[in-house]
Amino acid sequence: METKTGETLCSGSALFVEPKLFKPTFAQPAIRKAARTKDAPGIVSTTSSTEKMESKPVFTFPAAQTMLESQWRDMEWTEEERKHLMKTISSYSPSSEEVTQARVLLLGPVSSGKSSFISSVQSAFFGRVTNRAMVGSSSTSFTKKLQSFNIRGQKGENPNGLVLCDIMALGDGEMTGLTLHDVLSVIKGHVPEGHKFSPDHPVSTETVGYVKGPVLRGKIHCVVFVVNASEILTYPKGLRGTFQQLREHISDLGVHQVALMTHIDQICPQTAKDVTQVYKSHIIRDMMDKAGALLGMSTSYIVPVKNYSSELAVDVNTDVLLLKAVDHILQYADLYFHDNIPQYTGPKTD
Image (cartoon, rainbow, N blue to C red; front, side, top):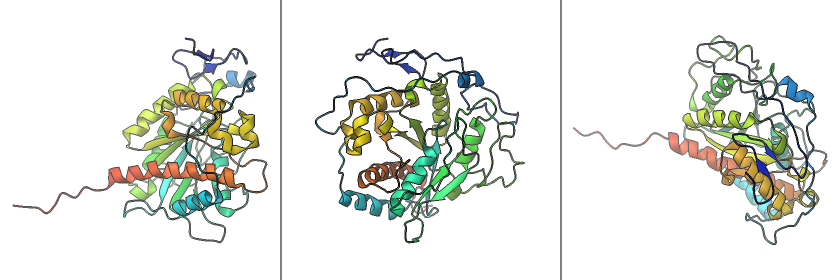
């Protein structure tokens, strides 16, 4: 099927190929099953060892890079807007008396930028670049265990109403993939903090620290899928099915889902020079559409972000984009609490 830009959409696949740029070839992804437990679904990993051996095409910029005259999403790039967003996020409180913080789980493939996002958000609040969540550079997930990060201000203030939870990446390979069973166990609140994941040992009632009766404050209240804009065209074919499987099961738990598209500076030179151009970029808007197709969600749920990487100091405009993403996430986290607030039925009558 040809699109108006000359791209080819592979039917039933998450892979979008632009033949003018490159012609990648992928092996069929292999999906292992987790060690058998009575309720452990199959592996979430979608990358086989064969695929890892093949060279991965590098994103190259299209020849024409025209920019829109106006932003396709309204944004204010000012210090005042940065302060407003900081205040809004810092004063956030879940609309439930049982919970003081919204727990948000980040899920994404290797090098999607989820750990970098956590560090970047903390940097915005610290006022200086800091690596709060450890970030790796290998082809496998650097994060191996469940880690929860409170977001704090630079003057030692109490943590705000947001907790960002990091976890092993999706699609790490045949021996390191995260199981669907383990993802759902984290969302349900069964997995203890610091638990180290292994596909051969799914979370069970025998797991050390297993939470048998999780309460609302220990569950996940929103899931954020994180994808790398520079790799969306080259993700393994099976990843689309993985996201669909995850989203269906997570939806069954009543948990809302949004998404981040990271590394936008790697696909648009104008945005790399000036992040305020993000919503004037044809390239980024088109890649958002592809991210939506990959994830199976409307682009209204997806927010583009630029994480801090080589910078030593924070930037107002980058902070605004990051904080806007956090505000977007909190809106959907709060929907979870609205959905789970006990309904008042009025006084009993005879």
